[in-house]
Length: 221
Image (cartoon, rainbow, N blue to C red; front, side, top):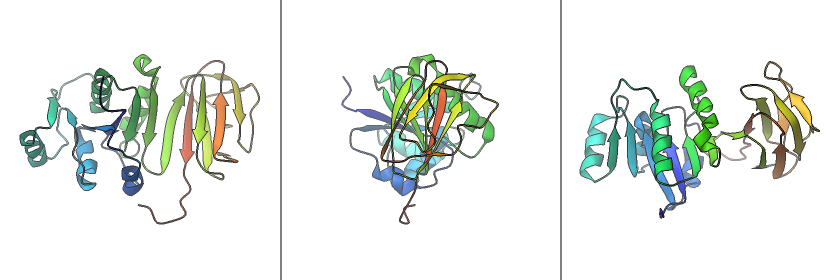
């Protein structure tokens, strides 16, 4: 069994509040760099346990230094059928890790952002806890039910993903839903609000993207 409890995958998107992300890390985290996500690890003074991808976006001297230091590198050909993040997810699952945090998987290229969100629907992730986080916004996919932790006043949006979301029920939100249907072409689930530190969301059929936007009371960057 792995000595690590969670895989934290750094992606090559935007990291809006790096200090907030770094503060959430623990020694039990297995750090993975998905190619160009290495820049975020380097900026935070962190060393990955594993570097995955075709490495076309990673700084070559840094990659060489990490290899000399004994960091494991899984180099893939540039002409491949999966993004670096998908390969990194597969590597995390191969480590036996089912608690996954994807850092800086939002922002930057729109196609990459949409692709990263689509990866949340991978069948092999159905039994995993997966969060996307850029330090300011947190995204998860709800397949059946979830407990959301945050602060009162934070914005919480529920977006039906890849079709209808039926039987949606919420607790702890300013605008509650009671066994209702959310439609992918409608915007009803956007900009709800947490009433306390915990909210609950469940649905009978479909999937929901749940996006929580944090409130910051100090300059945590």
